[in-house]
Figure (cartoon, rainbow, N blue to C red):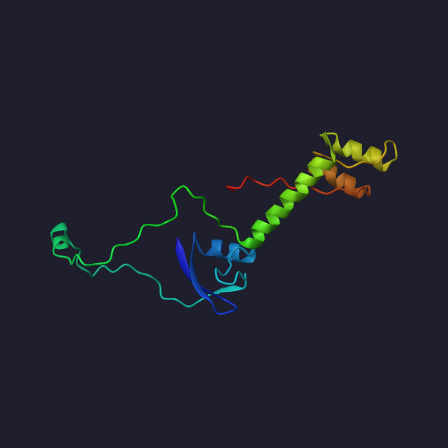
Amino acid sequence: MIRYALACEAGHDFESWFRDSDSFDTQLVRGLVTCPQCGTAKVAKQIMAPSVARTDLVRQTPADDAEAPTNLPAVAPDPTPASAPMVLMGEREQAFRALLRAVRSHVVATAEHVGPRFADEARRMHDGVVEFRAIYGEATTEEALALADEGIDVMPLPQLPDERN
């Protein structure tokens, strides 16, 4: 894991953890790295000193702990329960997924599912053999490309992963 000091275009400073440098770059390009204060995705790395463990310090033993001052402030527990899901998507990604979910729900509710017969049924409608109607179903990549080559307008209907992905 690597921690980056970041700043948005408005000058808000914040930090975030990433698996590696490539993960940061990928998430930045996808617009998933956003400022927690203003929400902008225009974010850049800040110059920061690396955190390196020191080996010149003497380790404390349990006996040394007994001599440590006891008037230190208590650390408050994390109010977030351990079972709460982590949200790694930015607001734009969440909104985009909600839109795709709504489109898919609309198509499923208003169109006829023709299953693996999709390419054949689309051709039959295009050729005027059957009356035009809204349909959806499954087609291989080759079938979809052939439909496009024939001038038949089709569009993939995305299947989103569940909320945990």
